[in-house]
Length: 106
Image (cartoon, rainbow, N blue to C red; front, top):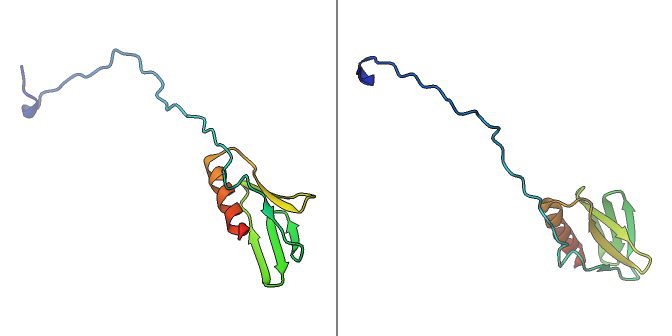
C-alpha cells in the first residue's frame, strides 16, 4: 500500500445517486400590527391631499409631506379617519405597517 504523502493515488467515486439539494421555504404568516390596525384621527382644521403613495397634510401648525413605501396603502375613510393597510403579506410589509402608521399618528 502506497502512502498519500509519497505520491499515491486514491480513487474516489460516488456510488450513491445525488439528489437535488434545496431548502424548505417557510410561509411567513404576518398578522396585522397592533399599532397599524388603529385608525388615524384627522382634526377638522387639517387638510389632507393624497396622490398615490404621497401624503401632504396642511394645518394651523404647518405642513407635512411623506412618501409611503409600496408595501403600505393609505386610505381615507368617509368617517374622517385615515387607515394604513398592507399591500402584500410579507415580513417587511408588516414592519412598515406599524412604523408608518405610528409616524403620522402624532
